[in-house]
Length: 246
Ligand code: GLP
Image (cartoon, rainbow, N blue to C red; front, side, top):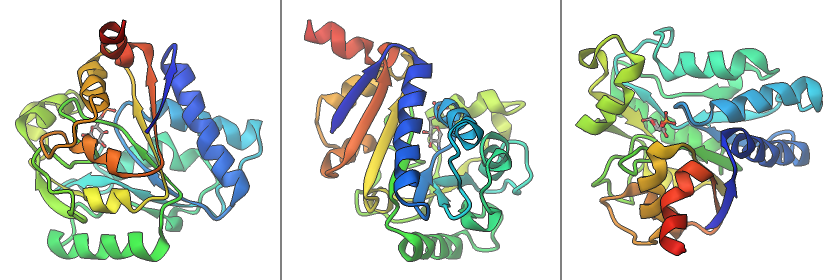
C-alpha cells in the first residue's frame, strides 16, 4: 500500500482527481468504481472542473458504484443514485446509460445482487476503484465481520454506521436499516484502488489500517491483500500515525 499524505482535504482531493484523469486520458473507455459519502465530494468537484479546464471527456467512460440503501427510490434525496447525479453525473459529459448503481428498490434484493456482480464482471475489471472508509473500518457497506470472499450482497447496517449517516436524514429512524453493497471480493477484483481518508474523524481508522493487521473486524484491512492500493490522506486523518511514529 502506497501512502500519500497531504496538508489538507483540497490537496488530497486534487491528487485523487489527477490519478483518475490520468487513467481516462490513457484510456477513454476506462471503467471507474465510484464511492459516495462526504469524502469523495472534493474529488468529484475537481473532476467536474477537469471537463472544461483540462478537456477530460467521460463520453465513453463507465462507472460502477459501490452500494445503495435498500428502500430508497432513485430520486429519494438521500439515495446514492441521487448523490451521484448531483455531485458528478449531471455535471460531466457521461452517458447515464454507462453509470451503474445498485437498485435499492428492486423487487428482489438478492437477485439484484447477482445482476450487479454480473455487471462488475462484464464491464470490469474496474480500472480505478475509489473508496472511502467508515469510522468502523467499513469499505462500501462491508461492515465489521464481513467475510473477505463476499461478492455483492445484502447487508444489515450496524448501529454506528446508521448513526454516522443520520446527519443526512431528518431523524435516525429514517436511516435505512439495510443496503446492497459490493463485497470485499468484488472490490479486490479492481486493477487499482484509491482509498481516501480525510478529517480527524478518520484518524483512528487510518491508524488501525496502517497497523497492517488483517482482520474481519476491520474490513478495510483486506486491502492489504491487493497489490495496487494508494491511500490518500490529509494531515488530520494521519495525525495519530505521525504522533506514534515520532
Ligand atoms: C458510507 C458509504 C461508504 C463511505 C462511508 C464514509 O457508509 N457506504 O462508501 O466510504 O460512508 O463516508 P464519509 O466519506 O461521509 O465519511
